[in-house]
Length: 165
Ligand code: CO
Image 1: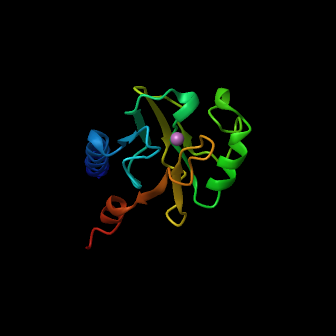
Image 2 (image 1 turned 60 degrees about the horizontal axis):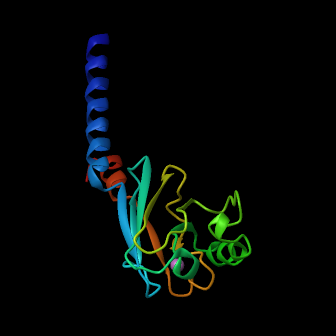
């Protein structure tokens, strides 16, 4: 009896580990490009809810320095985005145009200039399926063009939680 229970648990754990490893293969990270034309190369980033953490790599494919055409990648709820960007302007480049320790910021890279690359990694566990999220660049004046949606995908979780389907 005890032995059967142990075997069942071991199999479940093995399945969970396999699932986690599959997600980590490439679904838990994304590369976003930005340029001298003040644009990101994507308007939507998908974060699988199965990821423990998610990593965004931001590349600046242009040549202009960060003082003139700096870009960062910042994630907040859709509701908080504009206020975070507006308040970030006065924080200055030294603070990556974000108010220090702003709890509304879910993930954020440093501000980079042409030819540079940077990453940010943040936890996925606290994201809410019923919340709307966005990303943007907080360099002064950039959020109007440099923004997009962040979608938290629960597709994998639903498949696991409803085996009858
Ligand atoms: Co920018």
